[in-house]
Image (cartoon, rainbow, N blue to C red; front, top):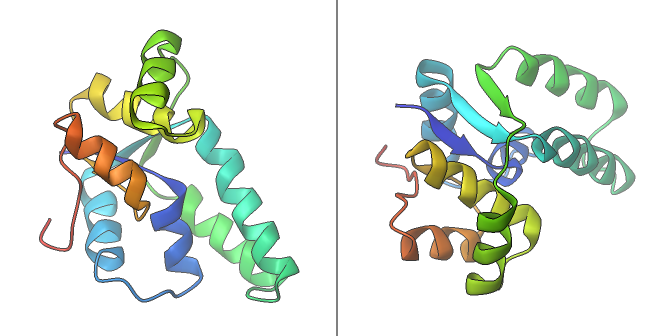
Length: 135
């Protein structure tokens, strides 16, 4: 089953952060595929540029990582439901950006893969499974 993947969990992989959910999620995405809202493209690149500025990655590492993620079976969604996103943002005090991930998971009827605690809590409150190390 595909999942909705947010930038936090993918960026954690390139930044080599330790979290038990990273590798199982990466394996799941490679095997099953994933969805992401259109803003994911920008969030990924912004996270990498910020990481370059903080000297956590080099330009070469950014280029390599972008090449690697381009081969992942991640479908970019460009059909968000504005009313649902705004409602979710208000209900759970999320950013509109985070609510876009949750709206997509709800619309597609798939789990959400995230390291963002507030987004994970909102997903669970909406009945959306959150991908964990056991997945």
